[in-house]
Length: 388
Image 1 (tube, rainbow, N blue to C red):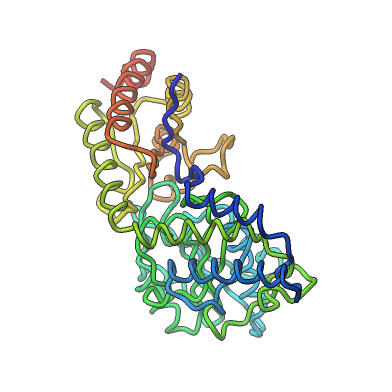
Image 2: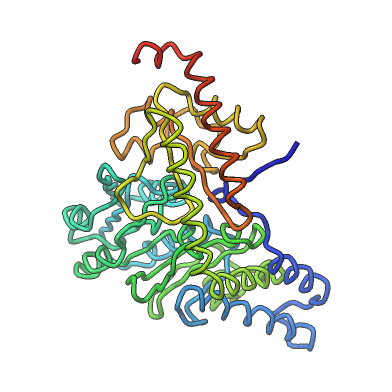
């Protein structure tokens, strides 16, 4: 049976460019980049070339980029490292109710360490307003953490506005940019971010390689200890093949990003309009807000989302009910309920996320499958039958 992949926010297929770069580095580079001999320096050159490619994606300098294992480590290092490094006697952190578990978990750990944490809610469209952040500020606020684009709805947050609010009170701004990097143009300096986390497997690189932008001058306490790798911010020998592949994926995004964003946005719009035309009682979660071009979160009234997910999987379509890091959870999406949806509405929602391998034919097949599954499940739903 043919399979069609519409879960790129969870992870993307490895791109040809990244795969070739990974294979070449794994085959040809045996040295440790910290070694002084020729093999070690060859590895170091590959590592630094890849670092420059990632810097071009984010608009930062090579001294500001810490290589990590991925988004979770980058978020944890940025949040825990910055707050623990603060010399304020009392500390307060502001984050949002719609963050990825990597951010929420790090903030929960800070609470266990005695740090006060405030969770700001978004509006009905999923946008966290700068005014809401301003209202939560305290004299002891040391860090504000707001994701750039939401992993479930794709809604883009007004980071530059939030940065002005945070910096005006002397706080740093951390952002989880995992779902934004390579999907939209990112300039960390223009955004005003002090810390910005990414991971390669969201835009064509293999799993296990990511990065954290740390604005020059920001003090960061490391989370692990050993050597002085990554300017003493992240000890441990770097994953050279993975980082080289990360650099190749970043370079492709820099060269092709604008045209690919236009193509993907057209496919996403084709999908949404097709479903809305064919299926009654469907809502787009996050409609009215700026969204990354590849993400569509739809609510199907009267349907359990998990049932539809399984039905579409059996028909060959890979989609998601939300964050891949929360799969298996029985609770409704914390993102959607924070936006004001009821538990039932949240459980009736599904995420469709497109990528480089999708085309119009696949999208049209998905529309047909969604319409057929929705009709089938609603015939079996006493809740929907009663409502109509």
